[in-house]
Length: 321
Image (cartoon, rainbow, N blue to C red; front, side, top):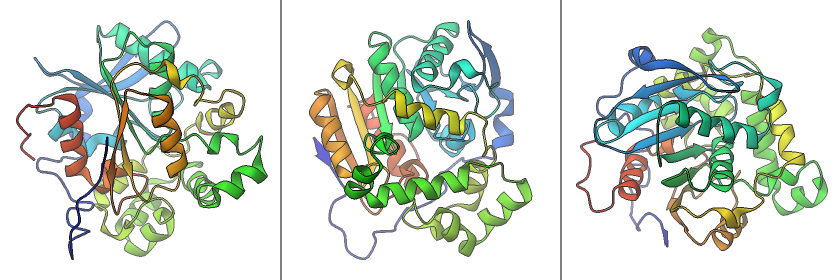
């Protein structure tokens, strides 16, 4: 199944970057922050309980943290337990050389779930988190209930260092976007500078224009939250690890129901990557967000939550958003 936005005239930006009902600042979730000690790491996460709903494990992108998803917590927590993890070396989780590969980050996610007695979770990963989530499904196929990929799959770019000419020839926009994103997220950003960028339409266009469709329409508070933990120490070591340990290998081992929630204008996940993933994972399908880039959960938050709910709880009444 491949589903996209229906044809509409004159309203293609309706709902883009909107603030969902009940959205609150990151500070309002501090009471839900906890540190989980596993056999190999101390991992910070936000754990929002729900008595009956399944657990959705949220995995952030490169140099991000649980704050990457904070604007979705009020909506998703209506029906689900939310477990938003700071992967080792990112956010508030400690850095260790042990966890600088995507495979070991994936193992750390399973360790956190084991420590919290989370069974058959829905694992949702964005960008780098989509690689980690996919490796969870490959390495621990019996532990997942289902898999959601957004800002991905990212398969071509991992060959950039080994095959630079061919990778650039096939995906020049993807390579340029990766360079732009690395420049934005690779170094720590002082909070006053992050606030200045978030609050300025012009600066948002400069900083984010390579990987979102309309940076000028994004909610400044959401952008500010995403920029709070840039420059994480694991950023470049994890990126480098993808050169020797291709995170797109063994996709045929993914057995759980899988859905790709993809922005149609996502340069980091070109159409060829999606087609390859779908050809190798028979349980996967795609929902396409038109007029959307690399951040569907931020660019189209209402539809993103609706699609997550539709996938995780088919046939259940819609959530109030």
